[in-house]
Picture 1 (tube, rainbow, N blue to C red):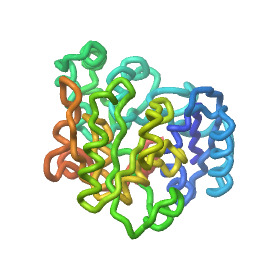
Picture 2: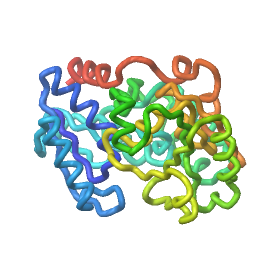
Picture 3: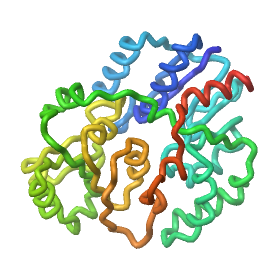
Length: 306
């Protein structure tokens, strides 16, 4: 079976690569179609383009523009002439699902929880969520037969502490706590110095992660160990979580990543509403997420339905 992965945004690599690697190991033919994108995570940025080439070479992947199945992210780059599976990303589907549900054959959610929570999202005190969630409900998201609950390939990766520490210039003998850097508009109210002092007092070293579109304050960048995304695959955030004893977040959707990575998250609320609140509860992975290989489950579904 030929499986096409078209993309213009390098974030897609976090989801596509594990699935493609597993598909290739099972005798399928993954094909990548790189289109065009000029944002900080776009495929047309020279550094990103170089990363793509390196990944294609390292994993012996091929380029192409057609196949039996098309795998996309949130309905972007759908191919009408093919069977389309689209993968959801964190909570982005709340605003996007109604736009693509009629264009795809299947929508892959991490678990049933992400569909069940939409009715609660409609009640959150933020207008974009209210509208998006209601539009999802109007699109029959809670009972749509296109919905599949097969996990997220992003977490089907194997990580090595020594390799990660070497990659980021860290000492594998040290203890680390990862901090999810707040958005620039929330930084002033985030007591980063106090948090780091407490971490250091516990004998650990704070390592701070942000995204390219959320720049570090210069004084923070100079004072602490600060990292942007060094590679799209494996994802820098998952690598730094892997070597950390815990994560400090601010009502971040990264709590899903921390649960999947078995890295406890300490939450410092900075919003007037909670998101993914249940994920802070005990046994959240087995209760609200999943423990099996997502890539294997998706490929099995393809083999039985395409």
